[in-house]
Image 1: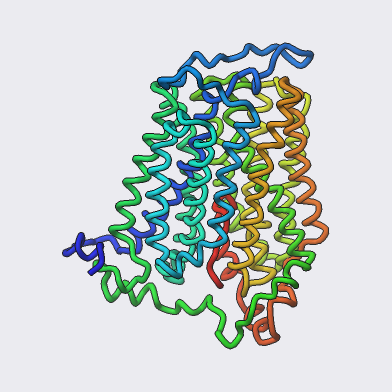
Image 2: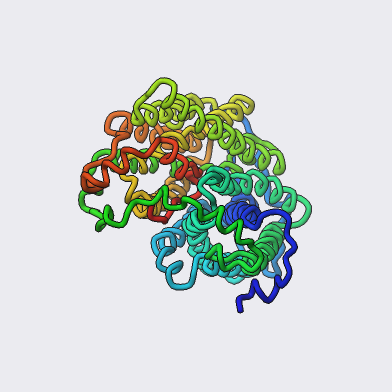
Length: 502
Protein backbone atom coordinates (compact mmCIF):
# COMPACT_ATOMS: atom_id res chain seq x y z
CA UNK A 1 0.00 0.00 0.00
CA UNK A 2 1.35 3.44 -0.97
CA UNK A 3 2.07 6.25 1.48
CA UNK A 4 -0.79 8.17 -0.07
CA UNK A 5 -3.20 5.32 0.66
CA UNK A 6 -2.12 5.17 4.30
CA UNK A 7 -2.51 8.89 4.81
CA UNK A 8 -5.67 9.47 2.79
CA UNK A 9 -8.21 6.74 3.48
CA UNK A 10 -11.35 8.77 2.91
CA UNK A 11 -10.90 11.79 0.72
CA UNK A 12 -14.23 13.53 0.49
CA UNK A 13 -12.62 15.96 -1.97
CA UNK A 14 -14.93 18.31 -3.84
CA UNK A 15 -12.24 20.00 -5.94
CA UNK A 16 -10.87 17.60 -8.61
CA UNK A 17 -7.62 15.90 -7.68
CA UNK A 18 -5.87 17.16 -10.80
CA UNK A 19 -6.44 20.75 -9.60
CA UNK A 20 -4.71 19.96 -6.30
CA UNK A 21 -1.85 18.37 -8.24
CA UNK A 22 -1.64 21.47 -10.45
CA UNK A 23 -1.45 23.63 -7.31
CA UNK A 24 1.38 21.50 -5.94
CA UNK A 25 3.20 21.72 -9.28
CA UNK A 26 2.86 25.51 -9.10
CA UNK A 27 4.20 25.54 -5.53
CA UNK A 28 6.99 23.16 -6.54
CA UNK A 29 8.18 25.57 -9.22
CA UNK A 30 7.79 28.36 -6.67
CA UNK A 31 9.88 26.55 -4.03
CA UNK A 32 12.57 25.55 -6.52
CA UNK A 33 13.30 29.16 -7.36
CA UNK A 34 13.23 30.22 -3.73
CA UNK A 35 16.14 27.83 -3.23
CA UNK A 36 17.76 29.22 -6.39
CA UNK A 37 17.69 32.99 -5.79
CA UNK A 38 17.75 33.36 -2.00
CA UNK A 39 21.55 33.43 -2.10
CA UNK A 40 21.50 36.52 -4.35
CA UNK A 41 20.17 38.72 -1.53
CA UNK A 42 22.21 36.96 1.14
CA UNK A 43 25.34 37.55 -0.95
CA UNK A 44 24.98 41.29 -0.38
CA UNK A 45 26.07 40.73 3.21
CA UNK A 46 28.74 38.24 2.27
CA UNK A 47 30.63 40.69 0.05
CA UNK A 48 32.80 43.73 0.72
CA UNK A 49 30.93 46.78 -0.52
CA UNK A 50 33.99 48.40 -2.06
CA UNK A 51 34.24 45.62 -4.65
CA UNK A 52 30.79 46.30 -6.03
CA UNK A 53 30.00 49.91 -5.14
CA UNK A 54 30.86 53.03 -7.08
CA UNK A 55 33.55 55.27 -5.64
CA UNK A 56 34.38 58.88 -6.42
CA UNK A 57 35.25 59.24 -10.11
CA UNK A 58 34.32 61.28 -13.17
CA UNK A 59 30.94 59.56 -13.49
CA UNK A 60 29.38 60.37 -10.14
CA UNK A 61 29.82 60.49 -6.42
CA UNK A 62 28.44 57.56 -4.49
CA UNK A 63 28.67 56.85 -0.78
CA UNK A 64 29.88 53.38 0.04
CA UNK A 65 27.61 51.15 2.06
CA UNK A 66 29.32 49.27 4.84
CA UNK A 67 28.75 45.78 6.08
CA UNK A 68 28.03 46.92 9.61
CA UNK A 69 24.31 47.40 8.79
CA UNK A 70 23.17 43.77 9.58
CA UNK A 71 26.42 42.02 10.30
CA UNK A 72 27.06 38.34 9.76
CA UNK A 73 26.62 36.50 13.05
CA UNK A 74 29.18 33.75 13.46
CA UNK A 75 31.17 32.73 16.51
CA UNK A 76 34.43 33.11 14.65
CA UNK A 77 35.82 36.51 13.68
CA UNK A 78 38.28 35.03 11.21
CA UNK A 79 35.81 34.93 8.33
CA UNK A 80 36.41 37.57 5.73
CA UNK A 81 33.80 38.83 3.25
CA UNK A 82 33.80 37.05 -0.09
CA UNK A 83 35.75 38.74 -2.87
CA UNK A 84 34.16 39.06 -6.35
CA UNK A 85 35.75 35.86 -7.68
CA UNK A 86 34.50 33.92 -4.67
CA UNK A 87 31.02 35.36 -5.21
CA UNK A 88 31.29 34.19 -8.82
CA UNK A 89 32.08 30.68 -7.59
CA UNK A 90 29.08 30.86 -5.27
CA UNK A 91 26.75 31.70 -8.16
CA UNK A 92 28.26 29.52 -10.87
CA UNK A 93 28.64 26.37 -8.81
CA UNK A 94 24.85 26.06 -8.56
CA UNK A 95 24.58 25.98 -12.36
CA UNK A 96 27.38 23.44 -12.54
CA UNK A 97 25.37 21.06 -10.38
CA UNK A 98 22.23 21.84 -12.35
CA UNK A 99 23.98 20.91 -15.60
CA UNK A 100 24.67 17.35 -14.48
CA UNK A 101 21.25 16.53 -13.08
CA UNK A 102 19.17 17.98 -15.90
CA UNK A 103 20.89 15.59 -18.31
CA UNK A 104 20.19 12.48 -16.22
CA UNK A 105 16.77 13.40 -14.84
CA UNK A 106 14.93 11.06 -17.22
CA UNK A 107 17.06 8.10 -16.11
CA UNK A 108 16.21 8.75 -12.47
CA UNK A 109 12.52 9.12 -13.32
CA UNK A 110 12.52 5.81 -15.19
CA UNK A 111 14.09 4.04 -12.22
CA UNK A 112 12.30 5.61 -9.23
CA UNK A 113 9.41 7.61 -10.68
CA UNK A 114 9.14 11.34 -11.30
CA UNK A 115 7.15 12.04 -8.14
CA UNK A 116 9.67 10.44 -5.79
CA UNK A 117 12.66 12.00 -7.51
CA UNK A 118 11.12 15.48 -7.33
CA UNK A 119 10.02 15.07 -3.72
CA UNK A 120 13.18 13.57 -2.28
CA UNK A 121 15.57 15.76 -4.28
CA UNK A 122 13.76 18.89 -3.06
CA UNK A 123 13.74 17.53 0.49
CA UNK A 124 17.50 16.98 0.40
CA UNK A 125 18.05 20.41 -1.19
CA UNK A 126 15.96 21.91 1.63
CA UNK A 127 18.13 20.29 4.29
CA UNK A 128 21.27 21.54 2.54
CA UNK A 129 19.75 25.03 2.45
CA UNK A 130 19.25 24.86 6.23
CA UNK A 131 22.91 24.03 6.79
CA UNK A 132 24.24 26.66 4.35
CA UNK A 133 25.17 29.10 7.18
CA UNK A 134 27.05 26.30 8.92
CA UNK A 135 28.80 25.51 5.64
CA UNK A 136 29.97 29.13 5.42
CA UNK A 137 31.26 28.88 8.98
CA UNK A 138 33.23 25.75 8.07
CA UNK A 139 34.81 27.45 5.04
CA UNK A 140 34.08 28.65 1.54
CA UNK A 141 34.86 25.31 -0.07
CA UNK A 142 32.27 23.61 2.12
CA UNK A 143 29.86 26.39 1.16
CA UNK A 144 30.57 25.85 -2.54
CA UNK A 145 30.06 22.09 -2.15
CA UNK A 146 26.67 22.65 -0.53
CA UNK A 147 25.57 25.04 -3.29
CA UNK A 148 26.74 22.55 -5.93
CA UNK A 149 24.62 19.84 -4.36
CA UNK A 150 21.60 22.15 -4.09
CA UNK A 151 21.96 22.93 -7.79
CA UNK A 152 22.36 19.24 -8.62
CA UNK A 153 19.24 18.27 -6.68
CA UNK A 154 17.22 21.18 -8.07
CA UNK A 155 18.05 20.21 -11.64
CA UNK A 156 15.71 17.24 -11.45
CA UNK A 157 12.62 19.30 -10.70
CA UNK A 158 11.55 21.05 -13.89
CA UNK A 159 12.18 18.30 -16.45
CA UNK A 160 10.19 15.89 -14.30
CA UNK A 161 7.41 18.40 -13.61
CA UNK A 162 6.86 18.40 -17.37
CA UNK A 163 6.40 14.64 -17.26
CA UNK A 164 3.78 14.93 -14.53
CA UNK A 165 2.01 17.66 -16.47
CA UNK A 166 1.69 15.25 -19.38
CA UNK A 167 0.36 12.58 -17.04
CA UNK A 168 -2.16 14.74 -15.17
CA UNK A 169 -3.43 17.27 -17.72
CA UNK A 170 -6.45 16.56 -19.93
CA UNK A 171 -5.96 17.67 -23.53
CA UNK A 172 -8.42 20.52 -23.03
CA UNK A 173 -6.58 21.81 -19.93
CA UNK A 174 -2.98 21.58 -21.10
CA UNK A 175 -2.59 25.37 -21.23
CA UNK A 176 -3.74 25.64 -17.63
CA UNK A 177 -1.24 23.05 -16.44
CA UNK A 178 1.65 24.63 -18.35
CA UNK A 179 0.84 27.94 -16.67
CA UNK A 180 1.52 26.32 -13.30
CA UNK A 181 5.21 26.42 -14.18
CA UNK A 182 5.04 30.19 -13.87
CA UNK A 183 5.34 29.47 -10.18
CA UNK A 184 9.06 29.91 -10.83
CA UNK A 185 8.54 33.54 -11.82
CA UNK A 186 6.26 34.17 -8.84
CA UNK A 187 8.88 32.56 -6.63
CA UNK A 188 11.50 35.02 -7.82
CA UNK A 189 9.17 38.00 -7.56
CA UNK A 190 8.41 37.24 -3.91
CA UNK A 191 11.73 35.78 -2.76
CA UNK A 192 13.78 38.93 -3.33
CA UNK A 193 11.73 41.25 -1.07
CA UNK A 194 11.07 38.45 1.44
CA UNK A 195 14.79 37.77 1.75
CA UNK A 196 15.58 41.47 2.06
CA UNK A 197 13.03 41.90 4.85
CA UNK A 198 14.49 38.93 6.72
CA UNK A 199 18.00 40.30 6.21
CA UNK A 200 17.00 43.69 7.57
CA UNK A 201 15.25 42.30 10.66
CA UNK A 202 17.59 39.43 11.46
CA UNK A 203 20.61 38.10 9.56
CA UNK A 204 21.29 36.32 6.29
CA UNK A 205 21.28 32.98 8.11
CA UNK A 206 17.53 33.24 8.54
CA UNK A 207 16.99 33.60 4.80
CA UNK A 208 18.31 30.07 4.50
CA UNK A 209 16.46 28.74 7.52
CA UNK A 210 13.05 30.03 6.41
CA UNK A 211 13.59 28.99 2.77
CA UNK A 212 14.62 25.51 3.85
CA UNK A 213 11.67 25.05 6.20
CA UNK A 214 9.18 26.14 3.52
CA UNK A 215 10.72 23.69 1.06
CA UNK A 216 10.63 20.83 3.57
CA UNK A 217 6.92 21.45 4.19
CA UNK A 218 6.17 21.35 0.47
CA UNK A 219 8.25 18.19 -0.04
CA UNK A 220 6.35 16.27 2.63
CA UNK A 221 2.95 17.27 1.21
CA UNK A 222 4.11 16.42 -2.31
CA UNK A 223 5.31 12.94 -1.36
CA UNK A 224 2.09 12.22 0.52
CA UNK A 225 -0.35 13.46 -2.08
CA UNK A 226 1.03 13.12 -5.63
CA UNK A 227 1.41 9.91 -7.64
CA UNK A 228 3.06 9.25 -10.99
CA UNK A 229 0.11 7.44 -12.53
CA UNK A 230 -3.29 9.08 -12.40
CA UNK A 231 -5.09 5.80 -11.79
CA UNK A 232 -2.94 5.04 -8.72
CA UNK A 233 -4.11 8.06 -6.75
CA UNK A 234 -6.32 6.86 -3.85
CA UNK A 235 -8.68 9.84 -4.01
CA UNK A 236 -9.35 10.16 -7.72
CA UNK A 237 -12.67 9.12 -9.24
CA UNK A 238 -13.20 6.99 -12.31
CA UNK A 239 -14.86 9.95 -14.03
CA UNK A 240 -11.81 12.15 -13.51
CA UNK A 241 -9.46 9.41 -14.72
CA UNK A 242 -11.53 9.11 -17.89
CA UNK A 243 -11.44 12.89 -18.40
CA UNK A 244 -7.66 13.05 -18.00
CA UNK A 245 -6.95 10.11 -20.28
CA UNK A 246 -9.50 11.02 -22.97
CA UNK A 247 -7.78 11.57 -26.33
CA UNK A 248 -4.39 11.77 -24.59
CA UNK A 249 -2.73 10.29 -27.67
CA UNK A 250 -3.63 13.32 -29.82
CA UNK A 251 -0.26 14.93 -29.19
CA UNK A 252 1.68 11.67 -29.43
CA UNK A 253 3.38 10.52 -32.60
CA UNK A 254 2.58 6.97 -33.72
CA UNK A 255 5.17 4.37 -32.77
CA UNK A 256 5.68 3.42 -36.41
CA UNK A 257 6.85 6.99 -37.01
CA UNK A 258 9.54 6.89 -34.31
CA UNK A 259 13.23 6.28 -34.82
CA UNK A 260 16.63 6.90 -33.24
CA UNK A 261 17.50 10.53 -32.53
CA UNK A 262 19.87 11.79 -35.28
CA UNK A 263 22.20 13.78 -33.01
CA UNK A 264 24.83 14.39 -35.68
CA UNK A 265 22.33 15.95 -38.09
CA UNK A 266 20.79 17.99 -35.29
CA UNK A 267 24.19 19.38 -34.25
CA UNK A 268 24.98 20.36 -37.86
CA UNK A 269 21.64 22.08 -38.44
CA UNK A 270 22.01 25.85 -38.94
CA UNK A 271 18.52 26.63 -37.54
CA UNK A 272 19.28 24.59 -34.40
CA UNK A 273 22.64 26.32 -34.01
CA UNK A 274 20.99 29.72 -34.44
CA UNK A 275 18.43 28.82 -31.79
CA UNK A 276 21.18 27.77 -29.39
CA UNK A 277 23.00 31.08 -29.85
CA UNK A 278 19.73 32.92 -29.26
CA UNK A 279 19.02 31.02 -26.05
CA UNK A 280 22.64 31.41 -24.91
CA UNK A 281 22.27 35.20 -24.90
CA UNK A 282 18.95 34.87 -23.13
CA UNK A 283 20.31 32.55 -20.44
CA UNK A 284 23.39 34.73 -19.91
CA UNK A 285 21.26 37.79 -19.22
CA UNK A 286 18.73 35.97 -17.05
CA UNK A 287 21.46 34.50 -14.87
CA UNK A 288 23.05 37.93 -14.54
CA UNK A 289 19.72 39.36 -13.51
CA UNK A 290 18.98 36.68 -10.93
CA UNK A 291 22.46 36.77 -9.41
CA UNK A 292 23.70 40.35 -9.61
CA UNK A 293 20.71 42.67 -10.00
CA UNK A 294 20.12 43.04 -6.23
CA UNK A 295 23.78 44.06 -5.86
CA UNK A 296 23.58 46.55 -8.72
CA UNK A 297 20.47 48.21 -7.32
CA UNK A 298 21.79 48.22 -3.75
CA UNK A 299 25.44 49.12 -4.18
CA UNK A 300 25.36 51.17 -7.38
CA UNK A 301 21.96 52.86 -7.52
CA UNK A 302 21.88 53.34 -3.74
CA UNK A 303 18.44 51.88 -3.06
CA UNK A 304 17.88 50.57 0.43
CA UNK A 305 17.93 46.81 0.80
CA UNK A 306 14.17 46.17 0.70
CA UNK A 307 13.53 48.58 -2.17
CA UNK A 308 16.41 47.11 -4.19
CA UNK A 309 14.97 43.63 -3.73
CA UNK A 310 11.43 44.72 -4.59
CA UNK A 311 12.68 46.45 -7.73
CA UNK A 312 14.46 43.24 -8.68
CA UNK A 313 11.10 41.47 -8.64
CA UNK A 314 9.11 44.11 -10.55
CA UNK A 315 10.75 43.52 -13.98
CA UNK A 316 10.22 39.77 -13.56
CA UNK A 317 6.52 40.45 -13.06
CA UNK A 318 6.52 42.65 -16.17
CA UNK A 319 8.31 39.92 -18.10
CA UNK A 320 5.72 37.35 -17.06
CA UNK A 321 2.78 39.57 -17.97
CA UNK A 322 4.27 40.47 -21.35
CA UNK A 323 4.79 36.79 -22.14
CA UNK A 324 1.10 36.19 -21.46
CA UNK A 325 0.23 38.94 -23.94
CA UNK A 326 2.57 37.63 -26.63
CA UNK A 327 1.31 34.03 -26.64
CA UNK A 328 -2.26 34.76 -27.84
CA UNK A 329 -0.95 37.49 -30.15
CA UNK A 330 1.30 34.92 -31.86
CA UNK A 331 -1.71 32.70 -32.44
CA UNK A 332 -3.64 35.71 -33.76
CA UNK A 333 -0.91 36.48 -36.30
CA UNK A 334 -0.97 32.88 -37.49
CA UNK A 335 -4.75 32.55 -37.76
CA UNK A 336 -5.70 36.05 -38.91
CA UNK A 337 -2.82 36.92 -41.23
CA UNK A 338 -1.54 33.42 -42.05
CA UNK A 339 1.94 34.55 -41.08
CA UNK A 340 4.55 31.81 -41.42
CA UNK A 341 5.76 30.32 -38.16
CA UNK A 342 9.36 31.36 -38.84
CA UNK A 343 8.34 34.97 -39.32
CA UNK A 344 6.34 34.89 -36.09
CA UNK A 345 9.37 33.59 -34.16
CA UNK A 346 11.63 36.26 -35.67
CA UNK A 347 9.07 39.01 -35.06
CA UNK A 348 9.02 38.23 -31.34
CA UNK A 349 12.81 37.86 -31.28
CA UNK A 350 13.04 41.57 -32.08
CA UNK A 351 11.22 42.23 -28.81
CA UNK A 352 12.98 39.56 -26.75
CA UNK A 353 16.58 40.27 -27.83
CA UNK A 354 17.11 43.23 -30.16
CA UNK A 355 15.18 45.82 -28.14
CA UNK A 356 16.61 44.67 -24.75
CA UNK A 357 20.11 44.78 -26.23
CA UNK A 358 19.60 48.33 -27.48
CA UNK A 359 18.18 49.38 -24.11
CA UNK A 360 21.22 48.02 -22.30
CA UNK A 361 23.55 49.86 -24.67
CA UNK A 362 21.62 53.03 -23.90
CA UNK A 363 22.39 52.49 -20.20
CA UNK A 364 26.12 52.93 -20.82
CA UNK A 365 27.44 56.25 -19.49
CA UNK A 366 24.12 56.65 -17.65
CA UNK A 367 24.90 54.23 -14.82
CA UNK A 368 24.51 56.82 -12.07
CA UNK A 369 21.20 58.23 -13.28
CA UNK A 370 19.12 56.31 -10.81
CA UNK A 371 15.60 56.77 -12.16
CA UNK A 372 16.61 56.33 -15.81
CA UNK A 373 18.52 53.11 -15.15
CA UNK A 374 15.64 51.74 -13.07
CA UNK A 375 13.14 52.33 -15.89
CA UNK A 376 15.51 50.78 -18.44
CA UNK A 377 15.95 47.67 -16.28
CA UNK A 378 12.18 47.22 -16.11
CA UNK A 379 11.88 47.71 -19.87
CA UNK A 380 14.65 45.42 -21.08
CA UNK A 381 13.57 42.48 -18.95
CA UNK A 382 9.89 43.11 -19.65
CA UNK A 383 10.39 43.01 -23.42
CA UNK A 384 12.36 39.80 -23.00
CA UNK A 385 9.10 38.06 -22.10
CA UNK A 386 8.45 37.79 -25.84
CA UNK A 387 10.90 34.86 -25.84
CA UNK A 388 7.94 32.62 -24.96
CA UNK A 389 6.48 33.16 -28.44
CA UNK A 390 9.87 33.49 -30.11
CA UNK A 391 12.90 31.30 -29.51
CA UNK A 392 11.49 29.24 -26.67
CA UNK A 393 8.82 27.63 -28.84
CA UNK A 394 11.11 27.25 -31.87
CA UNK A 395 12.51 23.82 -31.04
CA UNK A 396 9.04 22.36 -31.58
CA UNK A 397 8.93 24.03 -34.99
CA UNK A 398 12.23 22.49 -36.01
CA UNK A 399 11.84 18.98 -34.62
CA UNK A 400 8.49 18.27 -33.00
CA UNK A 401 9.24 14.57 -32.64
CA UNK A 402 12.58 14.98 -30.84
CA UNK A 403 11.82 18.31 -29.14
CA UNK A 404 11.86 17.00 -25.57
CA UNK A 405 15.23 15.26 -25.85
CA UNK A 406 16.90 18.02 -27.89
CA UNK A 407 15.61 20.78 -25.61
CA UNK A 408 16.85 18.96 -22.51
CA UNK A 409 20.37 18.60 -23.95
CA UNK A 410 20.29 22.19 -25.13
CA UNK A 411 19.26 23.45 -21.70
CA UNK A 412 22.02 21.43 -20.10
CA UNK A 413 24.57 23.08 -22.38
CA UNK A 414 23.02 26.48 -21.70
CA UNK A 415 23.87 26.00 -18.03
CA UNK A 416 27.44 26.73 -19.13
CA UNK A 417 26.36 30.34 -19.70
CA UNK A 418 25.28 30.49 -16.06
CA UNK A 419 28.66 29.04 -15.05
CA UNK A 420 30.77 31.43 -17.12
CA UNK A 421 28.78 34.65 -16.63
CA UNK A 422 29.62 35.24 -12.93
CA UNK A 423 33.34 35.02 -13.64
CA UNK A 424 33.04 37.52 -16.48
CA UNK A 425 31.32 39.91 -14.07
CA UNK A 426 33.83 39.25 -11.29
CA UNK A 427 36.90 39.79 -13.47
CA UNK A 428 35.42 42.99 -14.88
CA UNK A 429 34.62 44.41 -11.46
CA UNK A 430 37.97 43.27 -10.11
CA UNK A 431 39.76 45.58 -12.54
CA UNK A 432 37.13 48.32 -12.52
CA UNK A 433 35.68 48.90 -9.06
CA UNK A 434 33.85 51.96 -10.28
CA UNK A 435 30.98 52.83 -12.57
CA UNK A 436 33.06 51.89 -15.59
CA UNK A 437 33.13 48.26 -14.50
CA UNK A 438 29.36 47.99 -14.35
CA UNK A 439 29.10 49.72 -17.73
CA UNK A 440 31.40 47.10 -19.24
CA UNK A 441 29.24 44.36 -17.73
CA UNK A 442 26.11 45.89 -19.27
CA UNK A 443 27.90 46.16 -22.62
CA UNK A 444 28.75 42.45 -22.54
CA UNK A 445 25.14 41.63 -21.70
CA UNK A 446 23.88 43.79 -24.57
CA UNK A 447 26.25 42.09 -27.01
CA UNK A 448 24.94 38.70 -25.91
CA UNK A 449 21.37 39.81 -26.60
CA UNK A 450 22.12 41.48 -29.94
CA UNK A 451 24.44 38.81 -31.31
CA UNK A 452 21.99 36.02 -30.48
CA UNK A 453 19.07 37.97 -31.92
CA UNK A 454 20.84 38.87 -35.17
CA UNK A 455 22.08 35.31 -35.72
CA UNK A 456 18.56 33.98 -35.24
CA UNK A 457 17.03 36.59 -37.55
CA UNK A 458 19.46 35.51 -40.29
CA UNK A 459 19.68 31.73 -39.83
CA UNK A 460 16.60 30.86 -37.78
CA UNK A 461 13.72 28.89 -39.25
CA UNK A 462 10.18 27.89 -38.39
CA UNK A 463 9.99 24.82 -40.62
CA UNK A 464 10.25 21.16 -39.64
CA UNK A 465 13.80 20.09 -40.45
CA UNK A 466 14.63 17.08 -42.68
CA UNK A 467 16.40 15.26 -39.85
CA UNK A 468 13.11 15.07 -37.93
CA UNK A 469 12.05 11.98 -39.82
CA UNK A 470 10.42 10.10 -42.61
CA UNK A 471 7.84 11.41 -45.03
CA UNK A 472 5.17 9.66 -42.95
CA UNK A 473 6.18 11.53 -39.81
CA UNK A 474 6.59 14.84 -41.62
CA UNK A 475 3.08 14.50 -43.01
CA UNK A 476 1.76 13.71 -39.55
CA UNK A 477 3.55 16.64 -37.93
CA UNK A 478 2.76 19.18 -40.61
CA UNK A 479 -0.92 18.38 -40.14
CA UNK A 480 -0.66 19.45 -36.51
CA UNK A 481 -1.93 22.98 -35.87
CA UNK A 482 0.31 25.72 -34.54
CA UNK A 483 -1.94 25.80 -31.50
CA UNK A 484 -1.21 22.18 -30.60
CA UNK A 485 2.50 22.74 -31.09
CA UNK A 486 2.98 25.98 -29.17
CA UNK A 487 0.77 24.93 -26.28
CA UNK A 488 3.40 22.39 -25.28
CA UNK A 489 6.26 24.87 -25.05
CA UNK A 490 4.80 27.95 -23.43
CA UNK A 491 6.86 27.53 -20.30
CA UNK A 492 9.32 30.21 -19.26
CA UNK A 493 13.00 29.74 -20.30
CA UNK A 494 13.97 30.18 -16.41
CA UNK A 495 12.35 26.75 -16.12
CA UNK A 496 15.41 25.17 -17.72
CA UNK A 497 13.78 22.83 -20.31
CA UNK A 498 11.57 19.86 -20.79
CA UNK A 499 12.59 16.24 -20.93
CA UNK A 500 9.49 14.55 -22.27
CA UNK A 501 9.28 12.88 -25.67
CA UNK A 502 6.56 14.51 -27.72
